[in-house]
Image (tube, rainbow, N blue to C red; front, top):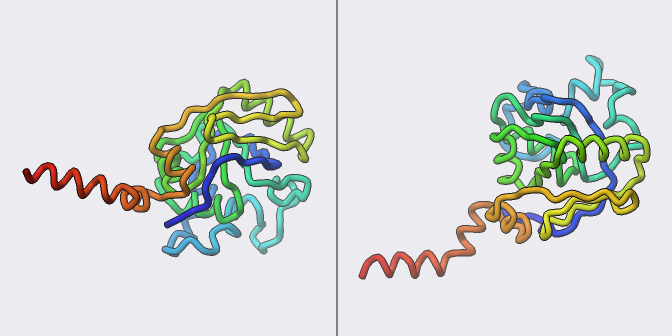
Length: 198
């Protein structure tokens, strides 16, 4: 599935500084029967956002109009728990294009990158500084440069590099999923197969 190319993202951000947010909190299990991506954004953090009657819970950050943006800043070990692509669908469906943490669950990270959601891993110190800035100044712009693998807050002179697998980086910058990537290599694959037949 072709996606938007990810080069440079400049956006405000949403702080959710909680550790060990698992996939059942991201998208409760009762919503997993659907097999298409549409509609999951409204179910993101459903049990934290709404009470039993479906009313917004005022204290939750996604219900706070001060915080908006395409970047989610969260705590350690984000996406732990059971493996479900639906968690990533909910995050992207809500409008997030990147999640920043000092650590991610491996399966969640793979699902995220497979589905075009950038995971930005930073140090605990950088994460704490970034969270404090965004919490106190919600209109602050965060800049993520995927090509140079740098996340920064220009107005605060805060900057950090972040690691990313070269294959995932290429897919994100070209807007490709795994199948599209293979199709883009079609001629090389055919040539390789022919060379093996000689």
